[in-house]
Length: 224
Image 1 (cartoon, helix red, strand yellow):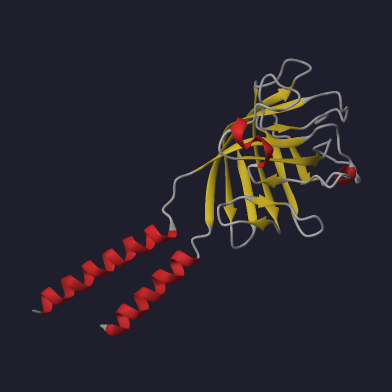
Image 2 (cartoon, rainbow, N blue to C red):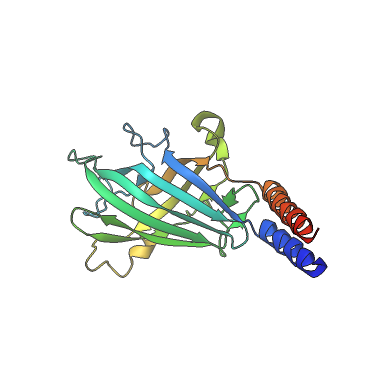
């Protein structure tokens, strides 16, 4: 019995120590330069390669999972968007996924991109045409890179915000070989995040020890 108790305690300690995933629900920021309407993603020249062709996307059902141990952030979900120039905006269904790696992550899920160490890539899909465009993070020449740390818009936008420049392929069928090096206008993420309520490690530990105590008490009652 003593060995079983010790094993369970160690297991609970390991489980609470490794409770590393922090989830956020993401929504549009009100500070995009191409608004209104507000948006969470902008990819200028998506089909045309012309920077003046502004494409914006509204976050419909988008989440982000931050791993404080693996130092990653995974964004993904459903969007509505299109070209602002021809009235398509918010009329086309899209989905996307994007993963940042090698981040500097804090225990509360906030993170910063580390130039030379971090990376980021993903894709966005037009659900009407099945066109798939590749995405990659872009670190500007001024050193400005992606972040998810609340930043300067915390007080105005809500509890949490994030942003980050992006490069994207232009032709979904045969993207140009140099697409990774081409940054068109203001292509970027710009979003607000709300943490999803999850049990704190201490709460998980209390719950686990409570269940363990009930098991021990039941065992003793049966033995009596």
